[in-house]
Structure formats: structure tokens, C-alpha cells
Image (cartoon, helix red, strand yellow):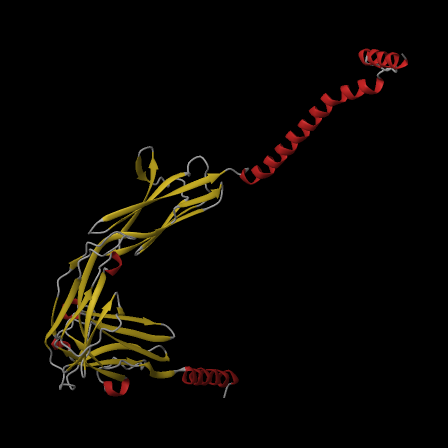
Length: 400
């Protein structure tokens, strides 16, 4: 045999062996899990597969008790309630989602994966070329819950007594359920309210002295022995009440100033920042790009960088507005000159200079008098002639 032919055969055999060694059959890393849902809910099924080459993923569905009649699912099916998001990389990952569930959505959902080159050949048996993972989705009729309508609070302003506030009560009543009711409890803004669990179907929560911070999204939750939880939401609304803000900010020119406001009330307010211009508040002029506003729910902050002593000092106002009402508070920004840190030193220096001047002037006024006293010529001592005459007369009388 020709040496070149032998070498070619060795190379071809090596390539075939390399492909065989590097290839990997499809396998599941994560399979979809069975769930029980209520009508109107949403579910998502996850499927993660590995293989070389990366396997293709498909989703299929069969009605309950008809697992022999699977139909492929496509994006946008069932009146656009079906979504399929698939990404291929080192692994193949796919998520099947269905919204606004109905009783007809119950059934068996199947994730299929394959990297077999013959997988789409109709002459091949799909049971051989595709691997499968199934999940059963059971959709139950959502229990009927009668609940209070939304409530609007008229709370007392922050920091004032609330003795005159009228109590508020939110109510829920479980009127129809296909499963045995276990217990009920209340939540506010997604957090369970302590000491509200009970066995009753007709449940209530009482706000004795409502304030703005009592506003929020209240939810009564019913649990069942063999079914998912059911709930109803009641919105308790109130105008915003600003409970904290920075009253003033004193900074040097070129530094940054930070003002903030936080509030209570529901829904979360829309925040705006204004500045006093003469006798009216106007929108901030951010043509310089030095004003940065951050808003998050019941909190806002205004950051002013590279302070300008000629334009930035003044009165700023944060305004909170929701569908129930509005409120605002003011903050003062003061900007000092670059020389401000030197003022204490200059004051001490000025005091020293003034003291030196006083000492020098005093010394100059005092020195001529002292010179005259030193240079005064010597002479006869001055005597009191009257006294001398009196002494002389006294001696004369004694002699007689």
C-alpha cells in the first residue's frame, strides 16, 4: 500500500475517534416539576439540558388521561398566554410560561431534548432519538373571597396626637372553596402581621388609630390542606406625610451637598424637587448637569456636586404627591467661600495686630514724660515759707 494512503487512513480514523470521544448524548441537568395552581395564576416550568453538540429543546402537552396524544406547544399559543424562552450555549436552557390559567390548562407538560442528527427524521422513532421529562400541572378553581373595598384614610399629621382618628376595619369572607380550609392570616405589604392567624373563614383586621404609615396593601390569606393558598387584596390609601428630611446643609464651595426626604402613605408618591426663586418655587435648572435626583418608593434624595457659591445657595423643597393628596417641606443650602477655613486664623491675627498697635501707641505716649523726669536739673529744695515763719515765731516765744 502506498505510504500516503496509509497516512490518510490513519488521519481519517483519528478524526472519527476524536468526534466519538468528544460527543456526548443529551442529558437533563434540571427537569420541570409538577405543581398545583389556581385559576388566574401563572406557572413556569424550567428545563436545562447538557450534551455535545448542545441539544435542541421542545415543549409538548397532553390533556389529563390522554398522555398518548401529545401536541407541540409554540410561542404565543392559547391566545398569547404561552411564552417559551430558550437559550443555547454550553447547555440548552428553556422556560415555558402560561399566564391567566384556566381549568383547561391542567395536563401533562413534557420537555424534550435531543442532539441526535436523526431527531427530525420522520422515519425514526422519537422515543429513541429524544429524551423526555414530564411535569403534571393541576389547575383548581380559585376559591371565592368577598373582601372590603379600598379604604382612604384621613390621618392626623405626623407628630400630632391621633386620639380623634376613626378606627378602620378591613374584612374578608371565604364563601366558596373546593378544599378544606385550614386557617387564615393577614399581611401588609408582603409581610405577615403578627397574631392574626385564626381558623375562621370570616376574618377581619382592625386599625384602631389610623395614621399615614398604616396605609398600604393589605392581604387576607387562606390556607388549605390539599390546595395552594388563596388571597384577596385590599388597598388602604392615605396622602403622603413627610416624616423626615434634612433641614439644612452647610458646605464649602466645590464640595457636594445631599438633601433627602422620606414619607409614609400609600400609594408611593411621585417626588419632585423645586428651588425658591424670588417668591415662587421653580423646577431645578440642571443645565450644568450637577443635580442628581434618586427616587425609590417613599424616599428621595437630591445630590448637588461641585457647589457654586453664586447659584446654589438657597431654599429647596421636596414635594410628595399621590392620588390622595400632596405635601412638601423645605431645606436650606448654605455655601461658604474657599477662604472660609481661614477666617478663624485671620481673626486671631487681626486681634494680635490690634494688640501690638495699642502697645506701641501706649509706649510712645509714655516715653517723653519719663525723659523729662530724668533730665530735670538739680537745685535748692523748695520749702514752705509759711511753715518756716511759724516755726521761727514759736522758738522766739519760748526764749522769752
